[in-house]
Amino acid sequence: MENFNTGRHISGQFNQELEAVRNHVMTMGGLVEQQLRDALLSVSDSNEELAQKVLTSDYKINRFEVAIDEECTRIIAKRQPAASDLRLIMAIIKTIADLERIGDEAEKISKVALEHFPGKKQDFLLNLENLGRLVLSTLHDTLDAFARMDFDAALKVHQNDDRIDREYEALMRQLMTYMMEDPRSIPSIMSVIWSARALERIGDRCQNICEYVIYFVKGKVVRHISEQDMDEFIS
Amino acid sequence: MENFNTGRHISGQFNQELEAVRNHVMTMGGLVEQQLRDALLSVSDSNEELAQKVLTSDYKINRFEVAIDEECTRIIAKRQPAASDLRLIMAIIKTIADLERIGDEAEKISKVALEHFPGKKQDFLLNLENLGRLVLSTLHDTLDAFARMDFDAALKVHQNDDRIDREYEALMRQLMTYMMEDPRSIPSIMSVIWSARALERIGDRCQNICEYVIYFVKGKVVRHISEQDMDEFIS
Image 1 (cartoon, rainbow over the protein chains, first blue to last red):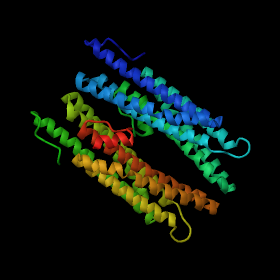
Image 2: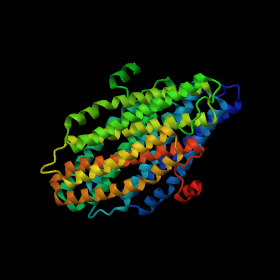
Image 3: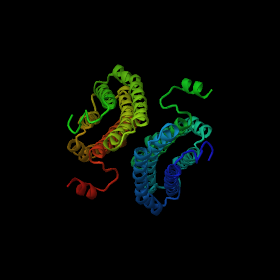
Image 4: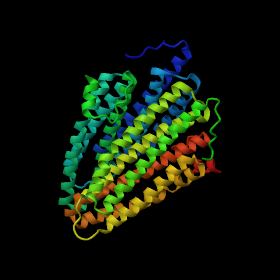
């Protein structure tokens, strides 16, 4: 775990608490990643059972959010953290909010598996799967950057969001064309559109989490800054 | 400002800091409300200029988010707040994140004003306006509940979200039917769909903010709890 010095604190107990909360975030992140993986698999395999499992498992993620949030508040009240410890707690509080919402998006995606698309597998479903794979690997890299609090890794993910946006736009154009050519397909296609949108939003939330990693490591808020300012900040 | 005792702290300076940060949140909230109002007005009046103003004003909200966030972190580090002071800071940190995203949704809504709908005013635009008015008044009530940290008001808003969801669902059915009847309208209707979705999400974010008010007043996290548990909690 680079960039991390456990044993910095006079209070070994405080170290243990910080480590514990970080571990809980990673466990929560693992659950969220599993939910997204299952949701995408349920779509590509038209597996309704797996889709239902995604829908009924979301509560676990919600519980983690509430528990970790309370843990962080308790640490602030009890340990009065400052400097990088406080930044870590702040980064965690925000990260779990985004992780919880990624879980909600995974639920939306799994609903596509409950739709029935006539005929053989449609092109747009394959493209949805491609977008899904890209977003899943982005989430994986994001959690990895968070686990190691790795500035370079976070920056790399942050800069790759354009690719998700481009694939999303291309898929949306394809879906609109499809609806125009076959208006009866509109209700089914709309559920694919919501899934595509959910994937695009997961990409945004991964960006957010990477911004918190950057904030933790560098002590600078990079949310909302212009591309030019970001380039200056990096150099 | 009921439920608020300024002058509680031995440090008058600390009181002033807490009041200042609360005022900043209210100013930010006022800006967000104005953005939503302008966005809705730009749609109902097909006012492209006003829509552009919404698009170029969002940076002000973003700046508030970053500034208030830094203010809160500074207060935690310097004042080591506990109990209700800490809950207030936590509620503020989360509220501004939701307010910032409501600003983003307002931007999306204003984009409908840049679309051109042939013929006289379509029914679905009138229904979008109705949903918009409902959501705007929900946002207003939410900010009001936050300003007074009023548990009852927050609970009332929280329980009214169903109405937004029902109007949203009805509008979506209407829009889908319209697309199926006139496939050439699909690209324009899609922008109305994104706006409707943005409004529905603003309703969700208002709910979140009300949950933070409830958390502040009662010290209990009501996120993700079941309706039954919520009823028990209230009684």
